[in-house]
Image (cartoon, rainbow, N blue to C red):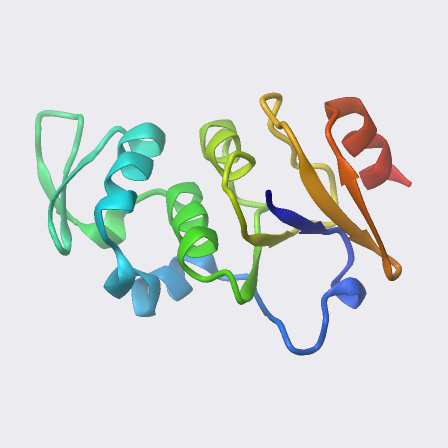
Length: 145
């Protein structure tokens, strides 16, 4: 289950907040990719990983460098491979959010509601209080409070 912070003030000082997911992925996460990444890339961007740093596009099977993944896909991979950091999810589309909310662990930040309709359960942190939320409407209310 992912942990959601809605205020930067709630993020513990020992955790780094990453706002620029593209840059972080291109400098760090891309080196960590393994078999788990293939499924994520296929589900979010519809691409096939054909080498350590290459993907095949769903459009005309064009081969691209891995830095051409969408920001949403990079964000999900950042969260998945870097559980000791908090990643901003403002640039995630619905397809990325659906995968993100299903991750077993990870930490994310956004100061406005960015919720998958398919969410099951998340941990929320606000003003030192943590709670487990299992309902879309309840999570939306928490975010708006």
